[in-house]
Length: 402
Image 1: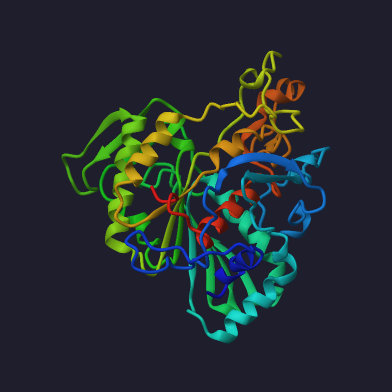
Image 2: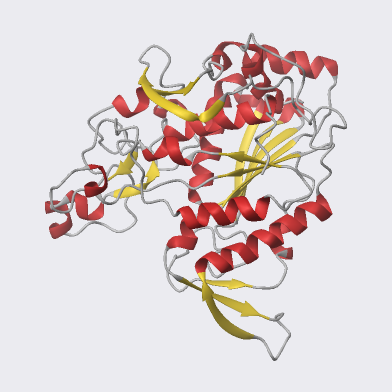
């Protein structure tokens, strides 16, 4: 599996392998599966535990792929505890990803010698949260590949990490609403006045074809308002017009388009598809009992310890995701990051990031007013998302498909 085999070393750390995961039709093992999850193991349920020995999985300064919007230490964050929490599922354990640091190169070479399936391509598609997970994966792999054997480039909406010796790529494609929209410029975009094209997503999906592993996400841009505008008709259609729709229903429409595209273009015997659930925000301190006026994620240095805590993530949007993806004839693995991330009020970038617009004097007097409680510092929470993705890729369970 070439570079994707780097992920397989996670599998090597698990002593409890059963028979390889079977496809939905029972026609044989799923692509990339090396075992099945233990019965009763739900990695989305558990707790955060402090693990100073194993965390962080890499250092911020050593990974050249992290955007300045996510380098919290470089931008003055005074604490590091947010880097040291490990997700512990109930009833089972995730393989220890730190093994990657010492053995990834050997695993890669072993696969290369076997000549296994050259030209593998892993593609993340979505918004800035998905891009953060993508960058996290590159940081996890960075040490395993010699400097002269890898490259990274970004052209418009597509970023490509190449491992030359293994003829493999890990890529990210910017499409925050999955469908074509007026937010498709990878640099200049805004969630305000969102307008999506109701026609098929041909311009985007032409980049998705041929991926061996597809990792989608879409949520944040759909909850920026109650309504979404939809442009109907083709560019050369004089009758095209703009209609307004509830955001949940517009989201449903787009997800159905994605499912139909998957059914036409993905061979489930060769490729795997995943959908990462909503990444939560922490903009209202009163949600976890902080009664101070204006309280949010700013200044938080520890996770929420109340196991019953439920954040502001839209359950309606989550329901739409599950309902639509359940209709797909191509199995879609759900990577449920929402619940575990809702506890992590401490791990956002807050004010410790590159600011595109210099804060005003009034804002600096109250840092809560411009704290980013949406995006996550790296290293941090997105590293755990990738651990869950590894788990779903290599140890599929019967209940992972929607």
